[in-house]
Image (cartoon, rainbow, N blue to C red; front, side):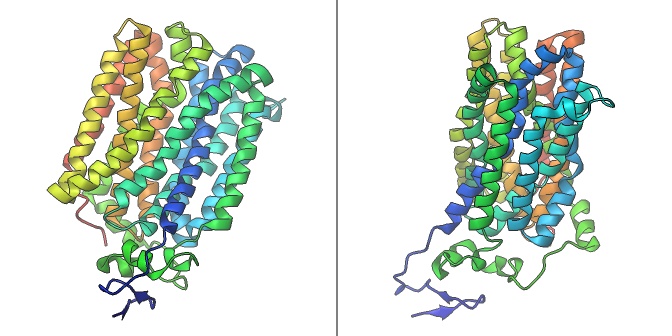
Length: 447
């Protein structure tokens, strides 16, 4: 007993169906994790190599803050454009080019001072290269999130989205120790060259395997397609002959949405806080806490190691919470628990004298932040599926603005008042980001 679905395939939802669904969607999730992982290597390498760069070029704390923050400014500037490009031209091409661009400028970081010789100082040369790296990488997360919104059904979306975000945790665990070892033994420049080569390989693999939508992939059978597309979402997944693009009218609906605006604000606050762990944490542990570089590199891996388990668990918890309490409350409650734990551990860790205990508490703060932040990406797909790339880009623009000012403001507060107060301020920003979820209602779409 078979019936034909609206997409022209045979639906196998009858009791007589025997064909099991394929699992291509989970292969796509694994590819997304690979992409997010390689993009985060591009951010972490400067944090670890930054100590060696600071020593070689004699940058003071404030100057190093501008170098570390340049990526965030470029990253913030082009998110909306990157998300729109993903909506307009498809994730396959746009994300492949994004990873390729960021890989080239990652490698060029190794020779940044020589690129500006004669007309830019070493510091400004690093700033320009890192800005261009960030601008090229800006499309990565919005387009990844758009891909997830098309490839994951309602009942799997939070868990599946959290799984691809674990790419951040995996690379965050491995990269700091690896980059520190490479920097010590082969020089800090080689760490950027190796990262760039890995990125080129990931770009090629993505383009070879991934397709924009499930119906375009030869490996997807009808049973899997029925799992991905609930009846109410079939029209939001146009066929390959329909060019996606966001109109001014659609942008008006998006920007008028209180949920979208609150989501953007929440992301700004949460990224401000967590970006300290991508920019200053290694230098903080070495210079403020007096840890050896090898020990510090292991400690900055701990938040990401924890997030490998925390992020998927938070996604699974969100899906279960949404089933029990409804989509809006289920998302809210899980975010609030993560935000609250993160803020508490930030404050306690900042004022703990024992270095080991403080590092452990601060690592926990970062892991809870990353887990809660993962739900924001799920919310973009909840609010709109067809324009998830553009909404993700708008949200990430504000997050990246927080990431841009975070290294600079953290350096200023730490210099004038001390590191405990800089971390206390990050905890305050975390709490404010959580409060925005009183406004966010993911049960209401913009379509």
